Amino acid sequence: MNWDDTAPSAAENTADDTAMGAQDRLVGADADGEDSAVEAALRPKDLEEFVGQERVREQLDLVLRAARARGATADHVLLSGAPGLGKTTLSMIIAAEMGAPIRITSGPAIQHAGDLAAILSSLQEGEVLFLDEIHRMSRPAEEMLYMAMEDFRVDVIVGKGPGATAIPLELPPFTLVGATTRAGLLPPPLRDRFGFTGHMEFYAPAELERVIHRSAGLLDVDIETEGAAEIAGRSRGTPRIANRLLRRVRDYAQVKADGVITRETASQALAVYEVDGRGLDRLDRAVLTALLKLFGGGPVGLSTLAVAVGEERETVEEVAEPFLVREGLLARTPRGRIATPAAWAHMGLVPPQQQTGGNGQQGLFGP
Image 1: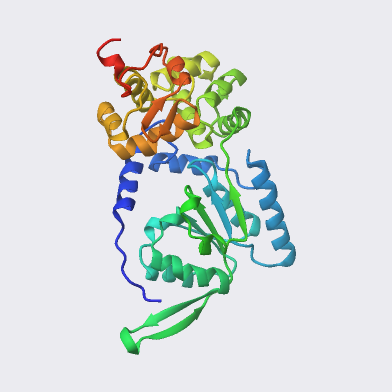
Image 2: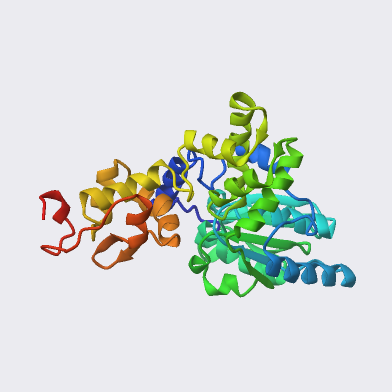
């Protein structure tokens, strides 16, 4: 295989821009620099300590125990799910459970087959390679990964044209842990080479309360059960967001209260940070407000909606819409975005009694 240069696609660049625009959201699941450092300190170190994801945890425990009993390298593992649910944490736990070092990289960082070959050739036997956002890896590198996963070998192409020669390079047995937020974008040949696939689900409020109590203990924060429940209810089913909200409520409690996080303190703190009782932030409410007040609940096109809230089209689609759809507040239809009855109720507005003109804009000019 030739190590051809492959430039990042326009879609990848757009994804990078959208991710960068989402990082300053308190309820965004993408971690920034400060959050990454703090999250590392809060991460559980083994499966026993890991909260939630019971089915994935049980299945993964069997895979790792069997590999240790055989004295073999664990099968390759694919973890899929939304950001912030614990895929990186589980990869580190896999390495710890197997007593192996871990190498961490990401799909966007591997844009040439040579980048991947350099990483693979430097792995130690039994080492865990964590490849985040694996679906964004370049095609040449992806094809090289097929042989590396299956035969622990890569072919290095030396020269070009008729005189090119393939030199096989043997690799030590290793475990690849791939993480993706879009499992559907993985080609079947790559998906099929993983021995275990686990899908990460959003957390229930009770599970998030356990996460918050554990993190509060590590941060030496006094928190009441009702305070943890208040934070958990606004955390969008995501542990990373729960930990971030906990730290912001801690700051408020230390400055404005007696340092103890109660339900009232948590509610007041999150009101300051514009996170409402359902977990919606300023951007979420701006989208709903525009949809309801300007367009009578829709349907309205995505580009029009984005202009109305002063955001990029991709930001509305990738950052705000997934949670609004999951919460049943917004629906995507062939004609455009529409608000559900739950959206009207949540925003404290009364839906129009009858539709006129079929364009969803009857609220603009009266009945």
